[in-house]
Structure formats: structure tokens, C-alpha cells
Amino acid sequence: MLALGIETSCDESAVAIVDDNRNVLSHKLISQFEAHQPYGGIVPEIAARAHLEHIDRLILQSLDEANVDLKQIDVFAATAGPGLIGGLIVGVMTAKTLASMFSKPFIAVNHLEAHALTVRFTNTIEFPFLLLLVSGGHCQLLIVEGVGKYKCIGNSLDDAAGECFDKVAQMLNLEMPGGPSIQEFAKLGDSQRFSFPKPLKKRGGCDFSFSGLKTEVKNTINYIQEKGASEQDLKDLAASTQEAIINHLIERTKNFLVSNESQSIKSLVLSGGVASNELLRSSLNKIILSKKMDFYVPPVELCTDNGIMVAWAGLERYRLGLSDPLSFKPKPRWPLDKIKNNKQI
Ligand code: KG4
Ligand code: ZN
Image (cartoon, helix red, strand yellow):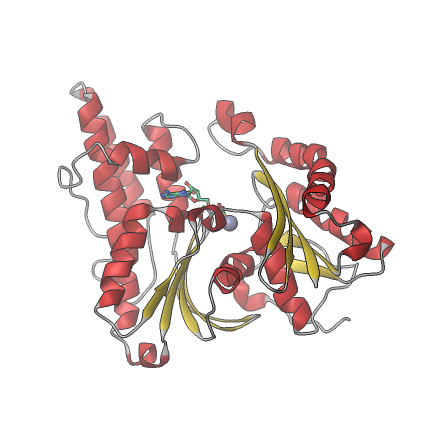
């Protein structure tokens, strides 16, 4: 069984073909980061136009690499939200058109569900599992009970962790995306040099908050720059910021791990773009060693946005007899607990 997946929700245009034996037949991805670089952030209009420009070619290249033709594809899946509406429309319209041309099912994939299920493509793991989903737009702790079944344990009250990495990188004039730049810069810095107040210190539970931390970092940058900051000062600041973000993610996850509810959970999964972070991966691995739990994290190239996760989420849904009507409208906002399990096949 073959699925073609299209990802166009943000600034990556990606297409992949996977089969139900968890093989990648092809994967094509174009990152638009150079197009947005002069503007210091993603410009939705530029992103949508770029997706439109690239998508047909990526599909043709993907079919070529997989050595299959469109008639052999069993299911066409596209990210239908959450994300930037212009890009979502490009991906969804393309998948719907192909599905209707070849009388095959169309699957509207929730981008967060695609991140959540990636680990079932890379590993053999059963439901339920605990998921720390950390990306550029989201920061959530969830129990994944099944395809389309999510229980939210904690959510960000303001910014996402990836957003915090990106904003701080911008303040330090580092390249976008900010996470990998901060990670590299931080390797040359002293993470103990600056200490920032812990977010939500007086509030237990598993929610997250990064806006206060971001402001503290900004104030510190302004302060050291007034005094003529050296390159080493900025590296120390990057290292200290990374440490503060990761510590907050770990602390809030630990709060769940000591609760009674965690007793029935056997695995912790890390996913989303920030899951590429080496310090986060190793720190979570360490805390899980002391628990009777397994820790899973997809390889770095499957943590950041890609077409494989969309094709796979499409297959997971299709195998359960789920599909979506061609009237499905892309959703810029689409929380995981609002996913519907429509039987349309
Ligand atoms: O999942 P993703 O590719 O896109 C969204 O769905 O948002 O995540 C992108 C985010 C960006 O904020 C980027 O800075 C962050 O993931 N990121 C990282 C690393 N690699 C990507 N953050 C920290 N460390 C990294 N190595
Ligand atoms: Zn993502």
C-alpha cells in the first residue's frame, strides 16, 4: 500500500512516498529559508507562492525516485492544518486534485498528528505513549491514546519553545531557523554564566511558558551590549538560554512523571522540530533511565517538517478506514483534540 504525502504548512515544501511496511520510497524537500531571511521571519505570501512554484516538480521528482506512477498511489495525503493558510491551500488542493483524478481517498492530515505518529514509522511502539511535542508553533505534553485520540496534559500559555529559540537567535543576529544556530553557538559558550528565573516556578503542573524567559534574555542582551558585549559573552548567553529552555521542558515533563496518571504509561516520545536539539534528547534520555520507561525520538531529519510524516499519518488513518471529503477546508488553527475521525471510504 502506497501513500503520497504533501507538506506545505510553513516554510518547507515537501513530498514523500511511503509504504505500509515503513519504507521510504522517495522524499523531496525544499526549504525556503533563504527567501524569508531578509525579512527576519516567515512572510506568508512569499511562502504560499514558493509552495505553488515547487509542488508539481517535487511530486514528479518523488514519483521518479520511487519508480512508481500516480495510478499506483493508494492514498493522497496533505497537511490541512494548523499552519499558514496560503501554503495549506496549495498542498490540500494538489492532493484533492490527484485523489479525484485517480478515484483514490484524500486524507487531510493534522500537522501535529503527523509529528505525533512519526515515531510509529521509525519504531515499533504501541499506544498509549506520553508525547512531548515541541515545534516552532506548538509546545504540548500529551497522552497519545491512538490515531485521532489525544489527551492534553500541558500546553504553552504563550510562546512555543521553537519560537523562543528563533526569537533569541534573531536578537543575536544568528541565521534562521534559530534552534540549530543557537545549538551550534551554545557549544562554544558557558551555560552557567547567566541564570534566568524559572518560568511558572510557583505553579505546578505541566503547562509551559516562554515569554517571560524571552524578555529576560532580551533585557540581558541589551544590558551586556551597552557594556560592549564580546563574542564570548554572546556565546555564553546562547548556551545559558538553551539550558533554560531545555530545563523548563524537562521540569514540566518530570511533573507528569511523578503523577499517578503516569503509572500506566510505558514510553516517552519526543517529537517536533525542537526534538532535534541534542541537549534535549540527551537530557530526556537521562531522566527516563531512572524510570521504568522507554524513550523514543525520531532521527533528526524526521523531527523537523517533512513529507514522510504526512504520508505516514495518511496511511495510519487510511488503515483505520478514515478519509476526508473533497469539500474539506484547510484549517489554520486545528488543535489535536479537535480531530474528527470521519469514515468516508
Ligand atoms: O516542527 P518544525 O520543523 O516546524 C513547525 O511545525 O513549527 O519546527 C521548527 C522549529 C523551529 O523553531 C526551529 O528553530 C526548531 O524547530 N529547531 C530546533 C532545532 N532544530 C530545529 N530547536 C532547537 N534545537 C535544534 N537543534
Ligand atoms: Zn512541524
